[in-house]
Amino acid sequence: MSEQSEATDRQPCTIQVVIDCSAPHDLADWWAETLGWEVEPQDESFIRSMIEQGFASDDDTVLHNGALVWATATAVRPIEPGPGQARLLFQQVPEAKSVKNRIHLDVRPGPPGTVDLDALRSELMSRGATEVGRGQQGAHEWVTLADPEGNEFCV
Image (cartoon, rainbow, N blue to C red):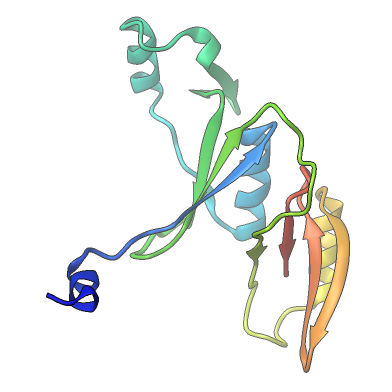
């Protein structure tokens, strides 16, 4: 069997993009609003059972928006998930961002020419984003922004 046929026999992969941050729940809320996605619900009864069984402690949890959740990670996903759609996982790390991202998200809010880029930039900046730069290639323009924790993305 050739390498190519072996690759096509596998199940397709999905992608989860992991974003290191200091405040995963706050950043997940920010990105869910930005993308029109939802923060994945966490199962409070499962979390409590893990504590009761000794697999976790109260220190592993926090109350966020009135719900008991795992303290160090949370995720956002499209409201109506479909096959092949990515998920963003926000995980707490102790260090602050120190260098430019080697990978970033391109947020596509609609077909080219249908979105007022300056209005979108202003809205995102009013919610805590900062402008990093602007670019253009032919008729295609973009703004590079950083989310409230400094992670770059383009719109």
